[in-house]
Amino acid sequence: MGTYPVPKVAEARGSGTRAPRNKRKTRKDIFAAFDYALAHPGESLTEIGPQFGVGSSTIANWINPPRTSPPNKLVIAWLKGRDILTLDGSGPTNVDVWERERPRNVISQRVLDAVRPQRKPRVKVVSPETDVGHDPLVGPTGIGTFVPAATDDLLVLKEEALKVKAEAEAVALEATTLSIAIDTIRDWMTDKDRLQLALGRIESLEQQLKNADEIAKRFQQQKLASGQVHSSD
Image 1: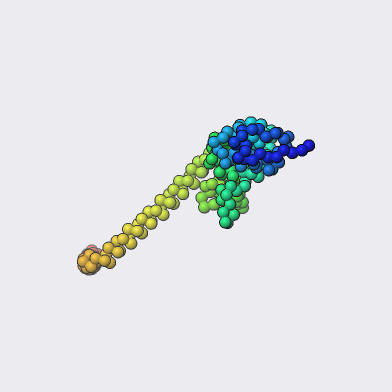
Image 2 (image 1 turned 45 degrees about the vertical axis):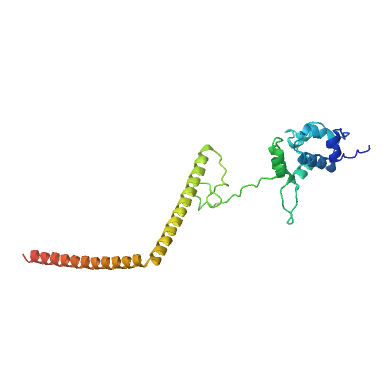
């Protein structure tokens, strides 16, 4: 059985003719269809499919396969590919560009999971001696790795979120206090009059402290003398 040549993008778009259908599409066929769809987001998938020898709903079924059918491996390979390569080999993937350029043609979660495998959360094992009856949370606070199994577990997550908020507020308060202290020191160091006034205030407070010490000593002596008089009686 012979194979049919894949129509060029310009010819397919301009002529509107349908390419003959093959039972099994090759990597080149599928990549060409998706490349064209990505380059022409204004055209519907039902119009693009027949131009590349597939049914009007085939491309839509490729990105939203039935539950009974696994995702097409060639479609997954195209979605993982890079749309534009940079010098370091990075750049947006085809699936990123597809979601941006053709948001109405939503890719199913099953296909997205195959393109972007989800990482399993790390599990921290706690010995019986250190376990206090609660499941450990991985990371500094556990947020992002704790998977609630029941509604009550959400309270644990809320508590951890409030803890993070309190820590952040404490850090912000300390930073603000430090900033005010720095500004205050700069003001005092750059203003000689205020500095002299502050030094005079310090001397006055020191003198008041000495006077208070003398008053306290006299009070203690009077109390001691009064106690001796009572004891002699």
